[in-house]
Image (cartoon, rainbow, N blue to C red; front, side):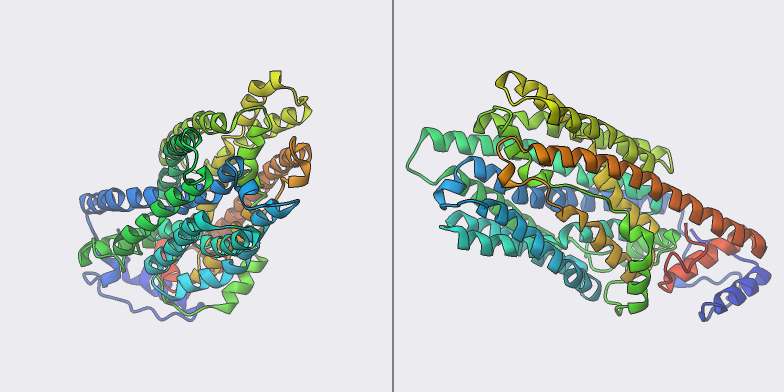
Length: 498
């Protein structure tokens, strides 16, 4: 809800915004623009609950964080169920299937996110999701390395924009104080769907082993995961989008959502605006662009790493379920905590890196003997908190970057760390170099997160000093920040951005 400024404050605001070459109309005290409608707390709560009821389940069911993630990691499941032998993969060819995915992911990142800004976000996301599902489905009929390479390349391209898009959607509907809890909620599908998918894949693989002669288990896995993704894409086509795109919000409810979101001082639903090259330059020189950290290569090789501990193919699926349950509980606990206690995300991110650092360091020192398999599994289990660092880092971009083009660039850069490869096929079956490298990356990422927080503290102190000298009232500062956000001014240019 916006504050009403006195005429003298409006004059100060007009003079201030003229520095940014923005015209401000000084309205009579009893006049409000459509963008400044004042809604009751009950109205805002009602529309928030409606968004939660529709958007969050939809994002949980179809977000790239799990269904897309399950499709991507399905390569590892397929590897333990015969895809390498059935398609005559040799030498480093399996690793190339991972490498090509990330190459096309990187190539497609910028142009795809450019399209998200220029065209309706909901439509673009569902088109990419549908195409991704088709590629996964077609893997079930692949016969050789060439077929797999083409499909994996297309998978990488269509994957690249899904997660950044969902991060941007979170910012389009929720205030800064709500970003972390809501994002963690839909990201919890990473664990929730993991439990269901592991049980389903276990059943598929068990049936295929007991009834030989039908489709190979790895082909069944592609049919299962690809079909689910296509189904979700069809549903999303009718329901997913920014506030101005969706039909399940009335015009008045869309105004309420926008009135809430302008408090972020980062503007509102601005799909379709012109690409701003000045913001591109600012994004590339902003330290936030380089604070994404090293994500590592656990997603694709993690399952194969479990087989190196001594578990059978079917056991690998079952022992992954406790990890998913722990992740789910962790997401809910941290989501509730961050909703009640402010300014804790970076501290949580740093703390979440300590267990995986210690676990992987110890894992690299253990001998490869069957009697240590459960000890190794326990040490690998210590990697679970890392998902908090990964996903909460994504939400920081939504909360702390303003300027539509700049946010698109930095959101894309955040996912570049997602493409790092650490585990190499040549290091099989123990993958000791990859395990050691992971531990080092966790340690470096810990330092990086602390530097990230120090940067924000320094920036806020600088802004506070400038604002104190300006002599503007708190209401004028708040209104200035909102107006500048509405005009797509970036976080570095808008001193009133928080």
